[in-house]
Amino acid sequence: MYVVNLGTYPPKLCGIATFSKDLRDNLSRTGVGVWVAAVSDAEYTYDYPAEVAYEIRQEIRKDYAKAARQINRSTEADLVIVQHEYGIFGGADGVYVLDFTDSLEKPYLLVVHTILSYPTDSQKEILGHVAEKAAVVICMTKRSARLLEFVYAVPPEKICIVYHGVPVFQVKDREQLKQRYGYAGRQVITTFGLIGPGKGLEIGIRALQDVVVRHPDVLYLIAGKTHPMLLRREGERYREMLNGLIAVLDLGDHVKFINHYMEHEELGNYLYMTDIYLSPYPNRDQAVSGTLAFAIGCGRAIVSTPYEYALAMLAEGQRGLIAADTTPENVAVLLDRVLSSPMLKAQLEQKTARLGKIIGWPYVAAQYANLATRIVNLGLVDCKLRLLSAPGPPDPAPPLAGVGAGTPHTFL
Image 1: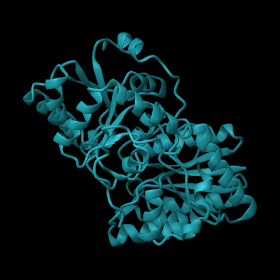
Image 2: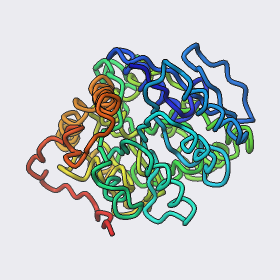
Image 3: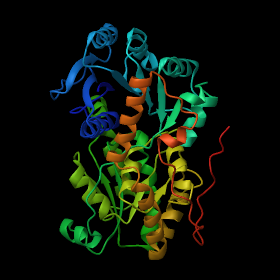
């Protein structure tokens, strides 16, 4: 069987590109052949690898229908996987994707990365239209499934939940890694990913101001490059603002930027040396976070602001601590709670590690392969028992003494 994956793709640096590459590599290991339809942008030229068979220029509308027609004629394309994120396609709210799906005659599996609780009419119409023709709509949490059903009117029998995959990192000793990287004797808090204003790093930095009073050995590592598109438009304005904030708060000895893109091995090293992974997104509608999924995959103790993906993945079974809101003060309280209790940190790590074992890419890719095979062979998949297409979370363990998960975000 051969599939075509539509989305961004490396060497472009973005979360969807990383997801597409990981999915392609792991599907290939299951015996599924994968070609790629890569969505490029006008600001960069990409030297794509051999698996990229189609290139769609983001703002060139005719490219979308043209790629679909080429796929229709291909004898090596049984199914298409469409990675949907409003910002990667051209036109207002990524409307050009409709030219692709409306011209496509092969069945497609839709993977939804952003599911807004309160979409505009345009956003709701676009996602609803793409989902209507899809054979299956994949989302990554139960909360997202409910939004698809009740906000976007996607029939429940079409919705399958498959967790965001994570690489299988080699487990390494925390203290040995700290010694290797020069952080021995420090309690390490980490946030990683492409840097930009939507990541909430200022929340983490301001929270640290209260934390260092009680924990002078703490070090906050912010790992990752500035997002290339942001860098092209604004330069390092956001990073410079953060550096100014660090100086004003006198946190120069407690915050360090690791200003480069990390491949999986190096990223695994930084995660395994981490005492707390901090996920400070300010946007409550954030439906997916690959960086948080990676931290879960490594079994880290996690402190997070209350956004959709964190609430879905951490709140059940108290796998992490979720602040009541996005204020630095409430984040600081939870950071202090974990730093002050080695037992709590160990309990949180055990809980996230249990979930991390079942979201590794080899397992997740096997679910995609199974769905693709059923669609190609049967023509239709009934996902009424959609939770069977992906494992549910481990059974919740008894509550941890003295651990609060903050105020959950109420659905509808």
